[in-house]
Structures are given as structure tokens and as C-alpha cells.
Image (cartoon, rainbow, N blue to C red; front, top):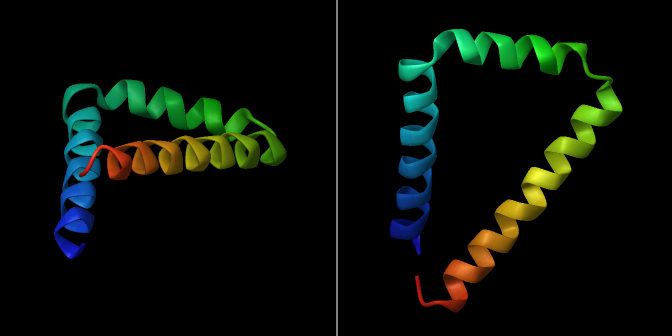
Length: 65
């Protein structure tokens, strides 16, 4: 179980690191766009991402990961 958590955290850090390494100006534009969004829209976006993440984890567990 702890191995899966480390694997998931490592994959998140890889994706985050790639975004900052390959397109730092795009990350800045994304942050500006997020800043311009109303708080409630950001909250909804975050809850949607959270729900999708749970679905992905559930699918992975169902497949035997």
C-alpha cells in the first residue's frame, strides 16, 4: 500500500516537474487565468479534478494496481 502511495506521488512530481521545465511561461499564463477566475469556479474545478482522481485510483485498484 505504501509503495503505491510513493508511486503515485512520484508520478505527480514527474508531471509537475515536466510542466515547469518544458513550459514555464505557459504555467505563468495558467496561473494568471486561474487568478482571473472567481473563487467558486476554482473550487468547482478543484472538486472536479478531485473526483476524476478518485475515479482513476478506483479504476487502477480494480485492475489490480
